[in-house]
Image 1 (cartoon, one colour):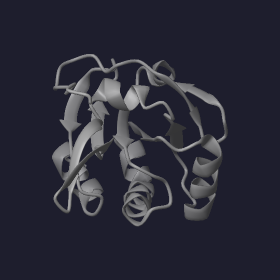
Image 2 (cartoon, one colour):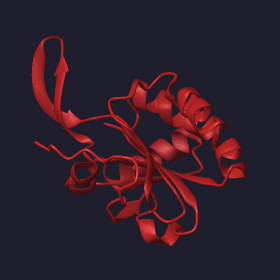
Image 3 (cartoon, rainbow, N blue to C red):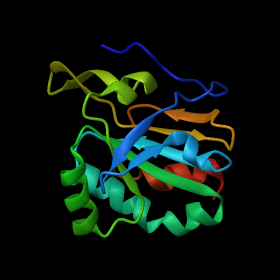
Image 4 (cartoon, one colour):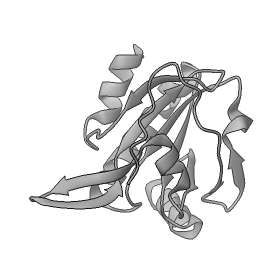
Amino acid sequence: MSDVRLDSGVKAPAFTLQNQNDKAVPLSSLAGKKVIVYFYPAAATPGCTKEACDFEESLNVFAAAGYAVLGVSPDKPAKLLKFAKDQDLHFDLLSDEDLGVHKAYGAYGLKKMYGREYEGVLRSTFVLDEKGVVELALYNVKATGHVAMLRTQLGI
């Protein structure tokens, strides 16, 4: 289990992950840009689809405010590609099959559902500044309404 929790003001853990096109995407390639990194449990599930589509609908607003968006899940690149095509997504979906990046960000740990405890992906979102420093760390967010709440918190 991961007991890591990132706070505002800390340097975000560096990573390089494969995107939906099986191309390596290092976080450092976005240096100088503000980045929203969100972690979700599984592509093509109802909640994750709603969240991804909400990010897609706000993509131009985020871009105009200087933000890039990255979605991270344990899915293989091929599943991410199908998801991106099916939902017409225009941002990188990154594959973290070994959960290393999830754990480094504290986005994997103990969950409770219907009275049962188990280890899993904690739906989480991180806003990084142009220097890769965490501005906002949001854990256990809800899929529905999350993007609207994030836009409100960022004032965009």
